[in-house]
Length: 249
Image (cartoon, rainbow, N blue to C red; front, side, top):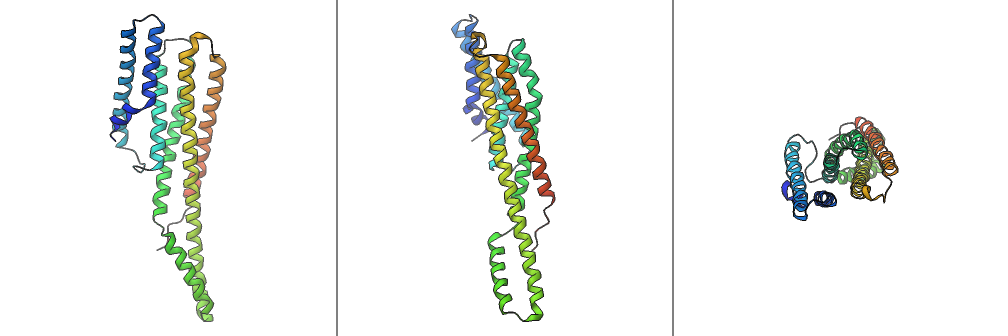
C-alpha cells in the first residue's frame, strides 16, 4: 500500500476533518462551508503526512515491514494529528495547554524512533545466529564428551563453553527485542489514547461536559509516564546491546 493510500485510510485524518467541520458548524458557518472546512483539514493532513513520510523514509534506519516499523508509523500518525489538531484551535487556554504538551510528545516520538532502530539492530544481530545449528552442536559435543579420551575432554569443554556463551547472547537479544516491542506497543497505544481524549476535549469543551483543566492534567501526567518509560527502556536496551559480543563462526 502506498504512503498516500495509508494516509487516506488513516482514521485520525477523518476524525480531525469531522471535528473541524463540527466546530465550524457550531459557530454558525453554513453547512456546505463547514463540510468544505472539514474536507480541507483532512486533505491537508493527508498531503502533509504523505510528504513527511517520503522524506523520513530516506533516512530511517528501521527494517522495512518489521513490527517496530508498524508501531512507529502508528505513533507518528497520532503525533502528527495531535500537532494538527492543536494548530487548528483558536487561541485560548485550551490551545495553550495543548501547545505546551507538544515538547513531551516530540521527546516521546524521538525515543520511539531510537527504540525502533534498536529493535531493528537487535533483529539483525539475532539473524546472525543459527539457533538450530547451535543446539545441534551442543547436543553433538555433549555426546562426544561422554565417549572422548581424557586428553581431548578439555578441548570439548572449551567448545561447549563457547556454545553456551552464544546461546546466552541469543537469549539476551531475544529478551531485549521482546522488551522493546512491548514498550513500543504500549507507548503507541497510549499516544493514540491521548489524541482521542484531546479530540474529545476539543469537541466538547464548549458544552462543559468535561473539565478541561482536570483532563489536561491527567493527559500531561500520562504523557510524562510514557516519555519516562520510553527513556528507561531505551537505556536498558542500549546497555544490553552494548554487552553483546560478536557471534563466533
